[in-house]
Structures are given as structure tokens and as C-alpha cells.
Length: 221
Ligand code: PMT
Image (cartoon, rainbow, N blue to C red):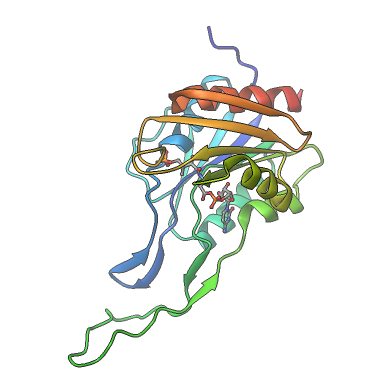
């Protein structure tokens, strides 16, 4: 039986991948489906939490009993995250956020010009939402959880990222061809700012979500 150990809590989860527009028809994006974030939202709701799900460009059905806020770009996600986090007990950033966006948005479709090389695309940095949420906690004791998609040196890179971002927990999943992005399964290590690490064996994304909420619930108690 599911324990309602998150009853009375408000949790915020981001899911999906941001899209950074180049022109009205093109964007820079990534392969996040939103499945891991949706699993986190559904499990938190089942455990009694009030859940705000910030969904970036996902095509999944709304989880039952969850407030869904739709966003597209990193800048929109930042706005929505800061707003939702204002009264949240925990924020989990499972979304894949673009680190950069095109410096210019062309209001008309970019055309190819015969006999000319394409113009390079200049990029500018996006805000780091996780670092900002960690830095400006809405209340003392608010928990901030990040995800890290790493392809090599998973643990060392994860530890460094945890320190850099300033969050309480970092879920490090190894990505690769046909791994994590888009699928129904995941395998991860959850690193704690307290030095803990919790390996989560290969399994459904819901199982990883249960472990994340276990670690959050213990820290909120
Ligand atoms: O959606 P699925 O198909 O189920 O795939 C799940 C997933 C692979 C997308 C998910 O498990 C995952 O790992 N999400 C984070 C992916 C990622 O962008 O990692 P990162 O190492 O680039 O970012 C680290 C953390 O900082 C993340 O919590 C990210 O949300 C956050 N971030 C990153 C950049 C930025 N500008 N702002 C941020 O807040």
C-alpha cells in the first residue's frame, strides 16, 4: 500500500525539454520525452502531495490529480519555476534545459541564399534555473533536487555538478544511445550534499521516482 508520506506538502517537478526558437519554424531542442518527470509527479501525487508539474514540450497525458503548467523555453521555465517554488516544500528539476539559446530570433523564416554559405548561429547562455532555485530558497529547509544526464565519468561529474549547482540531491543518470531519453526505464545514483549516495538499479522510471521521494520525505520530516 502507498503511504501518504507527502500529504500536506507542495512539490514542484519539471519535465521535458526546452525548445529555443531560431525562427517561427525552427528550434534548438533535445530528446527528453518528459517520462521521468511525469513519473515523479504521478508518484508524488499518489503519496499525497499537491503537485505542480512544469511541462516543457511533452506529449504525455496529464497525470491524475496534478496541476500542469505548460512552458516551452528555458526563460519561460525559469519564470514558472520561481513562481511555483514560492510556497513549495521541494522542487525537482527533471527537465532537460538548454544551456544556450540563439542570440537572435528571426521573425521571418530563415531562407537559404543560392551561392552563399549559411550564416553561423550565435548562441547566448540561458539562466541556470537549478542553481538559482538552490541559491534563493523560498524558505529555509526547502529541498532542491537536480538531475544530471552524464555520458562519462558519471560519479565524478555528478559530484562536481552537485557542488556547483548547490542543490540537496542530484540524480545522476547515464545517458547514451537508447538509454534514458524517451524510454520507460532508468538507472541512477542519487548523490546527497551530505555525502550520501544511493544507487538505484535499472528499472521503471516510477521506481526511481519512489526512491527520490523517499529521500525527500526523510529530509523534510
Ligand atoms: O524525459 P525523459 O525522456 O524521461 O528523460 C529523462 C531525462 C534524461 C531528461 C532526465 O532523467 C534528466 O536527466 N534530466 C536532466 C537532464 C539535463 O539537462 O541535465 P544537465 O546535466 O544538463 O542539467 C543538470 C540539472 O540542471 C538538471 O536538473 C537541469 O534541469 C538543470 N538545469 C540545467 C541547465 C539550465 N540552464 N538550468 C537548469 O536548471
